[in-house]
Length: 550
Image 1 (cartoon, rainbow, N blue to C red):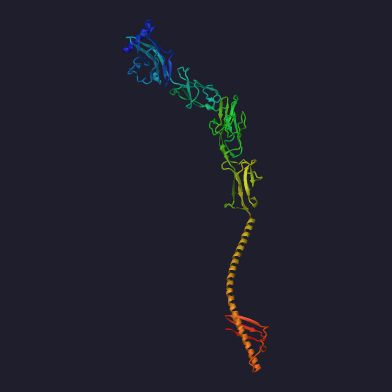
Image 2 (image 1 turned 60 degrees about the horizontal axis):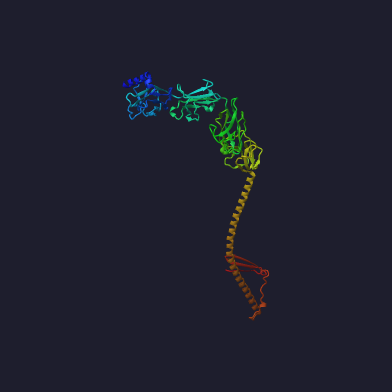
């Protein structure tokens, strides 16, 4: 209670005795109430004066939120035992014991709202002063307020929209702010964001805070911009291109009449159409070297946005999106067009399952890809690199003949590249089969004859060996015959001699002239050998001599 009486006394003294103390004693605060954001740090500027002959020993700040002076919130001396726990580690005295009495309070709370007063005491008994009624702090919170040209009707593309960061009761005109879009910090620091016009890509959750203090960030406000007349339309969302061919991505776009197109661009595999480098850019900036000289914009500045890509490569596969900007508002056409890159191939089907193709079979050759549909395309067929007149996707050979033999490939009509793989058809003809059978028969006959001759020669060789043995035996028989003939001749000669003796009577001598051998001019000798040799000699001038040699 003593403190209460002392404060009342000094209030009365200040009010009633201005001539005595008013000129030498005093506390000066801000003329206007201070507005602090919840979670922020507030500085209460303050200055005080007293007689120069005195020395300040104690300074005190009071919070009068409950209209009482019983709560000591700060004391600038070595004793801090009476400081309220509510302000410990949050309240800092930035002044001194001379003339500055500035106070700082961090992390402002709702309970911190109220009147703050400064009091100081000197070394002279009774030499103290309280700056009443003090300065007022209001605690508020930031919030984002949205204003639109069509209040209560939503926001459409092309409308004007503003987002303002403020409070219900505090003036923050001198403050800098930090803006956040979907929790991502924006470069703007002013209290108001202007969208003129509002675009679809502006749709997001926006919040704000005092610059440099995330604890003061407001609750987020959702800005939803409805699609207006900005639009991108693709004729086909799935395209299949053959490697080496040229593909057209047909596209149309639209926007409100008052707007003018500033720039147009195509991107690949980029959801928000802002990926760099680009496939195409109307300003010729950030274009990928991969598409230089191959990508060409066939559209215009009003409605057509068709893109052409030449000499398609496998790396060109992906999703393509068109984006355009009008008066600062842009449109990204998504989802985009998915491009697949394939190669042509020839697939053969035959009525014969074993793979051998013979005259009379049914064979089909189809020009196709693994995953792309080419039903609406015309083709060029090649046989042994010579162009065929057929234009359809399938060649039918029913029945197939020998003259269909060859290497077949295909390409899109009017293009010699890209060409598919080659499929080789070999047709087995009936004439060839006859020739083959004949040749095989001849070979079999020759082989058989060769075998027979070999066997026959072996038999002859074996017989010759037998004859050689038989000839030796015949020579022995002939020798035996010769001996018999000699004996016969001797016997005949002896008979001749005997006859001569009888004719001569007494003479023992004989003459060869008197005994002549018979004429063997007509002698037929037949020899037969039957184990023992039998020789029969006939026709000795009607003389038959038979003898047997045993």
